[in-house]
Image (cartoon, rainbow, N blue to C red; front, top):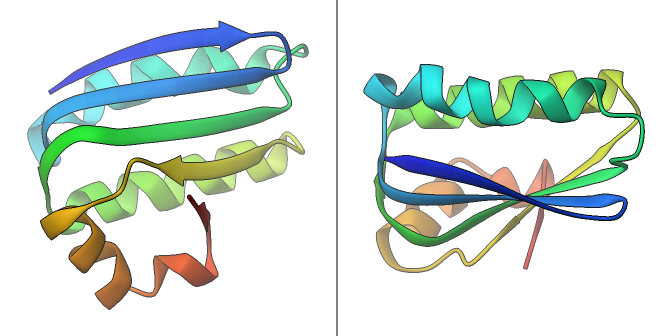
Length: 101
């Protein structure tokens, strides 16, 4: 998986591509941790449009992201969710925890 961060004023997008699983936890954490401390960033969106697979550890990483950002009073949303990724997020009821668009 690759994680690219795009900042646009108070918003940041973490664009993921490939498989989002346990083997990518360091890269994912490395992408979002600077955003937690960035006072200019008020909202973070994780873009899944290029992700073709995620597993339960990826769900845990998203929950960790939500906790960290929530502790810094920042909003978190998910975008580009489709196919198998959408199915996994729906089964896990992540629509109740994240704004998904």
